[in-house]
Image (cartoon, rainbow, N blue to C red; front, side, top):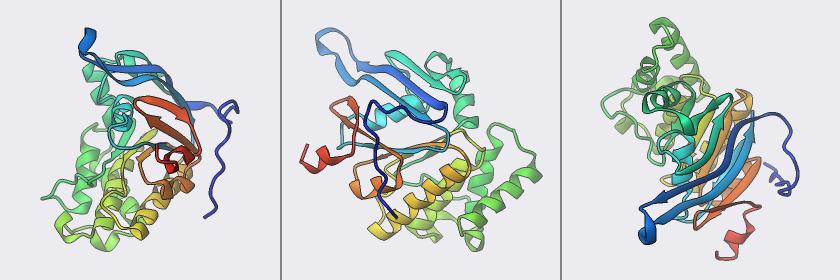
Amino acid sequence: MTTNTVAPADVQQTGKPILEVVDVTKTYGEGHTAVTAIAAASLSVAEGQFVSLLGPSGSGKTTLISMIGGLLTPTSGTIRLGDQVVSDMSKKELTNLRAERVGFVFQSSNLVPFLTARENLLYVASLPKKHSRKAAAKRADELLGELGLSDRANNVPEKLSGGERQRVAIGRALMNDPDLILVDEPTAALDTALGRQVVQLLAREVKQRGKTGIMVTHDLRMVEYTDQVFEILDGHLTKSDGTTLLDGH
């Protein structure tokens, strides 16, 4: 696959942004003991775009996507998903947002160990109660088929390979037809070949389904599958081509 060229920071994206992060800061503690994890971060991502968020461990990557996904509340700034202001939501509203509009894929697949691949998808569908059982079962079977897992649908996670577990996790993230997919280090536990397959699959699903996706990674080899690259160092976010990380920063 050809490496995507990252546009300069002053070039406007095409399409209406689905996700907008404006001057978001996250600070822990107060006064002279305060620690700023994220400092005035801003970004926007349009429908059908899959972007990468690069940075070393401890740089603030996970903190930022946790705020975007409604798992953490920013100290200041604004996060919008479509017509909703995520940063102003109550705990109950955030719970509903995560169940209905945000799909998560974590570093370790985080599947329920005693449920089969199919049951893991069906369990997620039961949370917002937006699908009938019949519709949920049909969607789960369709997703597992698209992900090449039809013959593994009745296997529990320990009977699946690492790549298969991550594919189940992708299916689970897509189960409720979310607008936003947040992916945290999806290749960390996989070898290079499997990692590429997983990221290619994520990019394809985001684009074909018209979703918005953000992938947190420290693996520069995966950047070629994304449309934009953002780099985060010591809590500061910049648009990038990723080369500064290659320079050892």
